[in-house]
Length: 379
Image 1 (cartoon, one colour):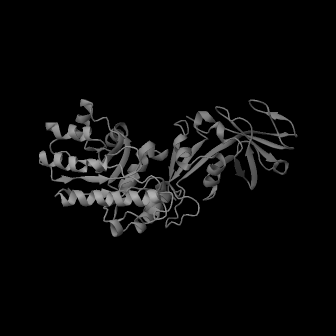
Image 2 (image 1 turned 120 degrees about the horizontal axis):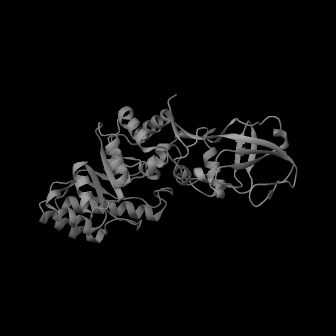
Image 3 (image 1 turned 60 degrees about the vertical axis):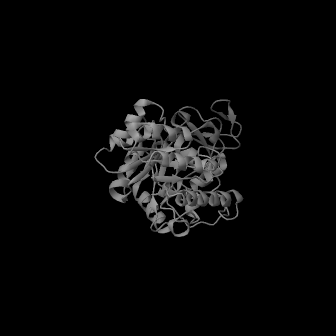
């Protein structure tokens, strides 16, 4: 683990974002998505703060391992956990985990539903069903809705704990994008079919971050009881440029490292692997971060900012270091051992970094490895 490179997580900003989401989603419950180690921010500290300070009681994970870690490390706290994709329900030992640790698998195919219905130990287990309304990822086929209803009734089931779908294009306009319109219509049809068949839907949800930002799929306009924010919890918007939204979040994290060394260069001097030539006279600052920390070689060419100077990541990012080229005006003003903020100085610097590196905030956050410690701060 490094000590002078760190991801500083501002919990006050997390609280701000949750409060903004609640303003957008009045009377709609929040199912807080915390998969991939809290989108790289540290699942356990984030969840603990969300439960104890923000009143969150439901979380979404991707794997049974993530859910089990939450339950084991926060066993004194009361909350519900859903596993959305890698549920591994067919393994006998996992059935025992679901039962004893109160973890809810999200069922996305008929065979998983049959397993629950035919396993005596699971006869009172809550059923959570996810339908594929057009994303064509995991999810039950809407055409199987009659079959599913019949099987529920055959086993004395008259309710579904949570009925779920997921938008494929929530970053686009919810009314302008035809797939969004189709998915919204299909989900409403599925809900109606279950209710008309006498199946109670205790909870329903379809909205992810982009649709929440556009006020779609909330209790007021769809009757859904829950919304499932993900990326927006951590600050960035999920919307494409030009798509209007109602969310102005605060970036939760700040990636800091420090300058190992600085030295002057002349035009044509080479640095790093592959001997990349410097474009002009200037200053090289070597940062104590590299792909061994989850800061990748493909970030080469991106601009970083320090003390009002614009620098460019030059040459190949190595395992432990990154070269940043600054103009000659920075000579004498940027020095070794200074703290260097890669993102988090301004609200839009992460967005600029993602645009330049042709990536997205999800990837940048989740890529950071455990060698970069997470530090949590208030105020």
